[in-house]
Length: 194
Image (cartoon, rainbow, N blue to C red; front, top):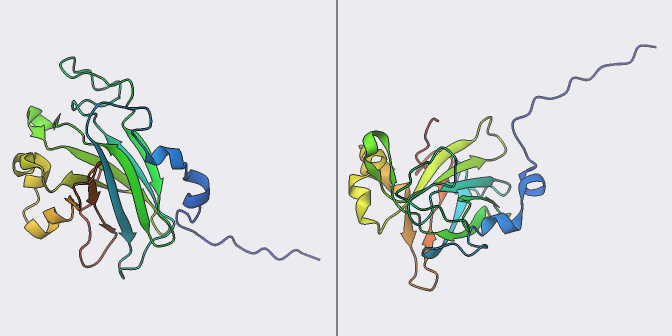
């Protein structure tokens, strides 16, 4: 008797992030005592219907407080490396799509043509239903150099630029910023092709 073959269903990435990628210690980029202003960033990941994405994973990459990346390609000698700051972290969302991570406020880094970019954190989002990660940035709404940042300046629509700005919510120690990531639809966060 011939065995009936059942095709394997196609599937997008996930839903395994919470189990496979969550490392709670990775959400505190200050755990080794780096130099700089310690800050907290909270927010939610929401789908196109405004519903929470409870199994997303955010990967974070940023410069240290002096504006230098802990990466071999950043060879600028005028900016010190911080041996206590790796500049990389990862945080998972909870059932309500919430995330929280602790880091230091990054310094400005050079962009194309050595134009200084405003302090920011690069974020890659992995979630069920995504074939590839989404990439965005977190800027700080209270940062004066946002006005001259070449990436923010390239976004003509002020409403779209606002989707990249984390809002300061308190003056506690450490200060807390709020940043929601909307995957599609109304209020969709600006994502970059990299």
